[in-house]
Length: 293
Image (cartoon, rainbow, N blue to C red; front, side, top):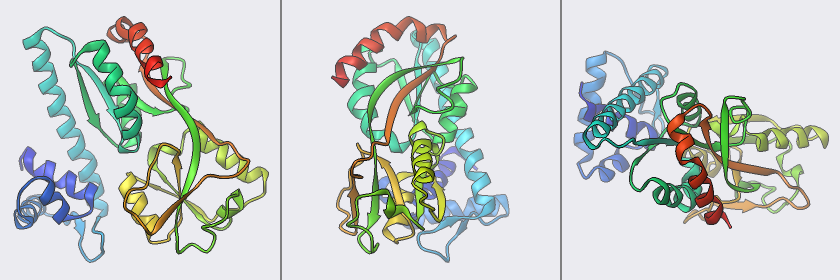
């Protein structure tokens, strides 16, 4: 087992596709498949269920996936530590999930660059993992929604952007032209894992209870890609922030609900007792405010 093999395994698990992973890494699909096969032989277990499309991790594969992510994350953090010693400069660590790419690119990266130049490191994780790493003092910032985590006394936050939730659904859904909460009746709500504990999502659930709208189920998935696949197959309705944009997907449509505000707040969460963060906080706050105007 080596780090490259673990990297390929993680990317295949995220993409749910061998071909896409091979293209992204500029190698053949055969090479990717061979790497995964060797890993399965070494661990003496099946990591993927290949009988379904898109492919899925087995129960064992799910556990290996989580452990593999930790191994690669620790290796990258070790590299950062070495870089800090060489340059004698502190490298700020920021964790995010792929559902936050728009605010990350539009607001956070420019603000961080103006504050600490290139002395920061970005790392993509699952949403739950991001918040856990912040609490365990393994990252300096977590890009997330205002939630139970940001309400903790030891956690501070800088507002990045605000908006309202909207819905994404398949055009095959018989209710796709409706624009009220009734569209969610007897439907499965699909959301990214880290959204479930956000204040905005809790407001949605309370609003549904208030209007006596009974939904079928909640389905929490790891990534935007997984949610889009489920929604495209008309397995439910996706709940997303209004900065989310559909691209080249003719089978899906977005709906903004009439006369209903389900506001969310995206923020940079940090530990209040982190001295390095406190040193740059005033300038970072100033830059974020100027970007968000």
